[in-house]
Image 1 (cartoon, one colour):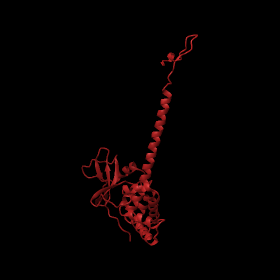
Image 2 (tube, rainbow, N blue to C red):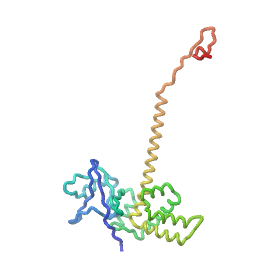
Image 3 (cartoon, helix red, strand yellow):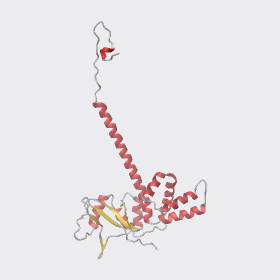
Image 4 (cartoon, rainbow, N blue to C red):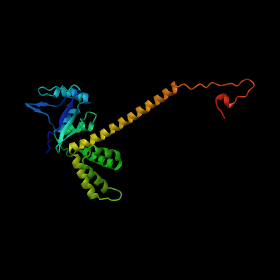
Length: 251
């Protein structure tokens, strides 16, 4: 039996002039503002980017009376409540192939039972913990790996280390990791976190390249437009040898 997901996620829109609204869709005679996460991803991943999604949203959205938000510009994000706190997570689009496929395969569900990608990504998370401290710290800091999951991954690494190995305990932890990642939200967080880190890294590298390019251009301009100082040669009188006094030096 599949586990049906609760509709606790909303798509919030902020227009360029500051108006805020929630995507409101009519199903039969009912207006809905909250959806399962897989349902939202299944919709947004049909679009290539935010602009494409806004075009689609204008067709889907049934605004409330006196709403001034026409969804013609701005940006959107997913909003939900967890332990009384409002949380935000980004939309995903068609370039995220794995979430595009999984959200459609498990639309309306919260758990991906028997999904082979879960095992693959469980080992991926473990290898990040072992070999990529920068990425792992980023995932923890921004909540892409939860406070529940992080210690379990750490324990698995400990039980499979060079100095101490306990296969039985390691297998228990691996099962726990896969169970957690079979939850679509936890799996999605990991995938999105790795993707966000890569995009931010590429953006930093591009900025650095642009800085280096501008520095090189500036140095070239300086070299081309600053003319060398012309020093006039002072010739001594005929029959007299040039002395230091001729060039302003006194001893």
